[in-house]
Length: 362
Image (cartoon, rainbow, N blue to C red):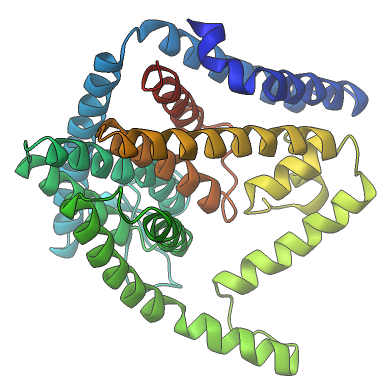
């Protein structure tokens, strides 16, 4: 089934790997670039084996349940650690370097949950698809009259974990995904008879807007000051990202076609770009980036058509696919503020959606 499952993206995926390889060759074949190419290849091999393992629609639903229960265990651990931190257990706190459950530095008055990762934003990227995958599964069970209180608890715990990361990139992703779902809901109002899906969308919308306003109001004010005076009053989210993006875009203009080589951007700007897609463009060139976004377009377009058909035919599996698609798109959005192209769980989410596209259709 492997070739049939990945058929929608076979050509752009081959193009991505081919031009990625050419970029490595034409930029000197440095060790860092070769290592990145091998890492990407290894990620794809693992995902291919996962795709070969899944043989039916029922196994996809079992996978979704496993993801949900694993997410619940992880989220519970995150809440326990956060409560421990509030009660002053400083041994779980560490700085930016090394392993620690909570990230705290002198620039913030609160700790940021990062669990076993080295960056709260990276942990937020890890949590995002879990939230939407579990919401999709809960909507599925709700549609067949088998509501799960456990899944509702897991969704709440995951949302709290995401909030405790204080990752504004993650919050932006959630709100844009909610807007994406709102548009789908308006275009297909008759298809969404699931009250759980409607109420979840409404409540999370309200909560996210409140959080967004509270976190970004200083950034909005400072950005306005910058536009008026050309000076940032503090190192905020917009300022820190904006200056790095501009620097990376200048490098892109000088190395448009082949890029500077995978993993080499930091040799040109001394720090990461905090944008996966700008970094991909800068390091691997124009053609590789086009093929990557071609993959995204194909998956999003074909998934949307299939979701519409499934829900039109009263097939609740459409909610599971919608949850998986939301998880993937949320990662794509958040990766505009963090450099995480080579993490395995991003490619797992792509494989997960491809599996649903194939088995739910056939």
